[in-house]
View 1 (cartoon, rainbow, N blue to C red):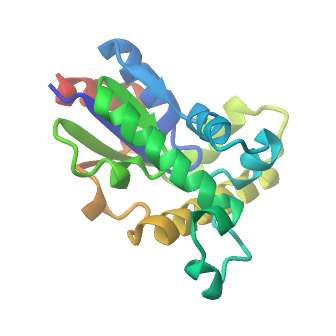
View 2 (view 1 turned 180 degrees about the horizontal axis):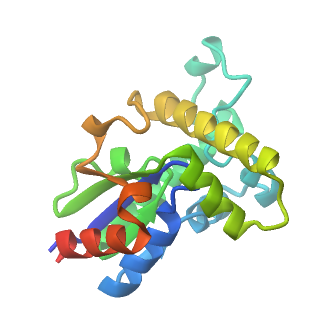
Amino acid sequence: MKRIITISREFGAGGGSIGSAVAKKLGFEYYDKEIILKAAGKSNMDIDRVMKWDEKVPSNFGFAQSLFDFYNRPQGEKLYAAQEAIIREIGEKGKCVIVGRNANTILKNFEDSLHVFVYADPYWRMEHMKAKMPDTTEAKISEEMHTIDRARKKFCSYYTNTEFGVADYYDICLNASALGIDNCIDVLYQLCK
């Protein structure tokens, strides 16, 4: 049985919903944004500022700054280090589903893990997000899809030297638009059992 499931996902592809449902079916703990809140608490950081850095690369990070020690790093670097430590602690305990935060790379050497990427075609993602955010315009949703996916790609590349969404870095890639969310949940449940 797989004890650790990590899910990376395109914005609007249903990765969070799939992860939450799989965790519930397996009786596992589910982790998403609360990881950064724990990291902020352990690092004595301002929660509002931390939420702005979530899955973003420090924009002002330059070559010279890479020579500083941990305490002189930009806040985003401190947050990532704290978040990475928390993800490792969660992985050590097992029986968990972790969505986002580069967990697939952080926990790549952990036994009994399954690393998943969830994607979907843009039209499906748009329809999925319109159902979740009925008061938001299509233009705004489209902008968010582009902005968030671009930020996730940069975040992944910056901190892990891997490529977001490239099959080489995952055990399985699921197309939610082709399979549907319920079938993605069933596939992961069966793989993990």
